[in-house]
Amino acid sequence: MGWIVRNNSGDAMLHSRRAFNGVPSLLEAKRLGLIWAVESMVSHRVPNVSFEIEASELVGSLNRPNAWPAFRAYSMEITEVLRKVTDWKVDLVTSETSESAFLIARSVTKERRLHSYVAQGSPFRLREVLDEEVLRSLS
Image 1 (cartoon, rainbow, N blue to C red):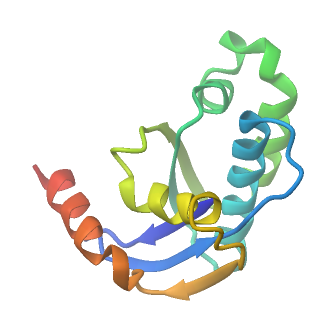
Image 2 (cartoon, one colour):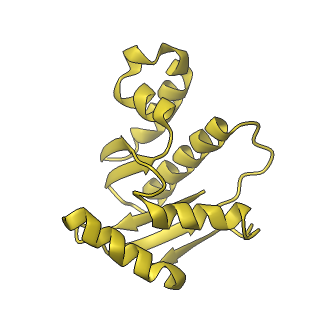
């Protein structure tokens, strides 16, 4: 999994990667990844966060819990963690929309980069991708 914290101008302030082992399903990995991202925002004192994830079940269960009753347990668990963040929202995105975070996460599985880390700024190898994302968001 991976995440990137950007400021209002779209500049990358922090980024991180983490590998989860022994997770039985993709949805479970996404649930663990979202909880990890929320807890990371709390520990780094990021008060206002827009979480963009590729998991319609999780986004739906958080934004419209009555329409997603089968995911109520996930919704309750994640909402409890989100209460630690001052202001938050969760949006559904595709890997193309947030290519940089996708590439960070993919480096765990495709490139076997299993070492977890948190770093300031943007990853050097993704600077072009990050700049393109900022330009797309402005148009």
